[in-house]
Image 1 (cartoon, rainbow, N blue to C red):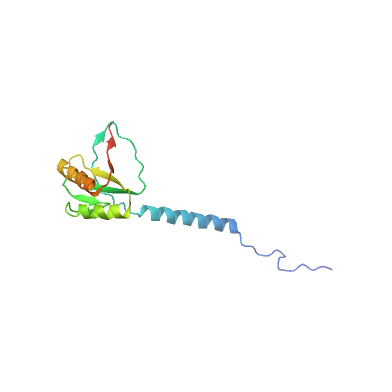
Image 2 (cartoon, one colour):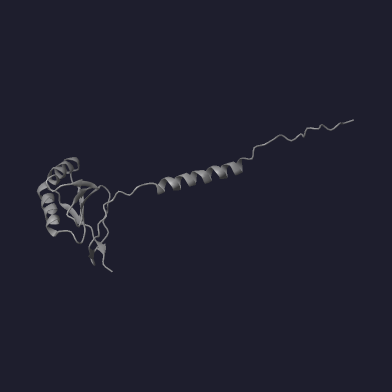
Length: 136
C-alpha cells in the first residue's frame, strides 16, 4: 500500500522572469533619473539669424562665446581679451589644425568679435565659423 506523504513532491522554484522585469525597470528608472540630473553648462547667447546658415560638423571643436555684455568664454570658461592669445597658442600647439566656432550674441559689441577674429588669425588658426540660427 502506498501512503501519500504530507509533503508535496514538487520542489520549490524561484520564478526568475518577474525578477528580471523588476531589475530592468529599476535599471531604466535609475538611468532616466541620472540623465535628468546632468547640468548643461553652455553659455546662453541669442544667436543672430542668417538665411544662408548651414549645419557644420562639430567634433573636436573649440567654442569662443561673446555675450551681449562683452564677456568672453573659451569652451564655457570665462576669459578676458588679454588672455585669449595665450589660450589660442596653447590650442594651436595641442591641435595642428583646430576648428573654432564663434558664438556671438546678436546684441554683442561687434568690436569684440573682430578682436577675437584678429587673435585667431594671429595664432594661425584658419578654420573659423560663426554660429548662427536659421532665419525663418
